[in-house]
Length: 278
Picture 1 (cartoon, rainbow, N blue to C red):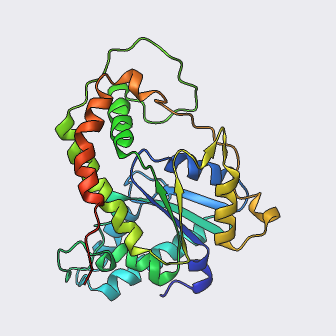
Picture 2: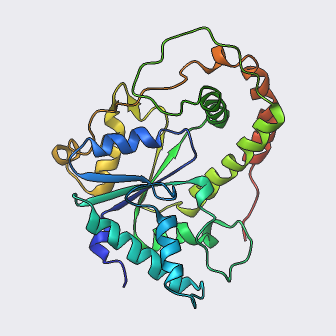
């Protein structure tokens, strides 16, 4: 079946890299009254919405599946229609991480990185999903946050983290470089794929959060994108229970500034104009 247009129009996808506020954004939506977030759909252990488990079941029932664009699109249409039927609100929201964007591609696809050739983003465009691109401009902060979370084995918390004595963490500059460059490239890929698309908005972390709430400017921006008046948009979000796990990274990481200086030239080269595109 084709995903009905009314359902597609009431579907919101957040695209972001890890450690960019996606969980806080989704949690705040669920604490509101209009949108049901099912969080990351590519997590196999997602109890209600794992696209990977749905994909495995789909293939298991279709031994002659040909991986054509039409078959892949039909699978996604059925999957999202099922999600809409399973939620208790009119609007559906889910997360897709940057490193999920290369999956669920048709078999007959050239290995190119052009934005308009990405199947998953092309599907979102074609169906008219509202895309919320969450951006953390300081990509090194994403890497540092991930390393701190691994070291502490603490990725999310609803408690305020008190300052405490901890052994300083030393980042590997080369490892940091290999982390930030793919994220920076993918961020521009997403921007290019949805450039000029009226169904895409960009919010910046942490600025879209104001204390334990989504900032008023972000509420207004999402409300406008959904076609809601100010009174209705006020019901989009509720309080955020999550708290920052590492608000002071320079205190925890002994060589943060040195690593930032190491990766800066490569990021600057990546941002240079590339001339006419064919």
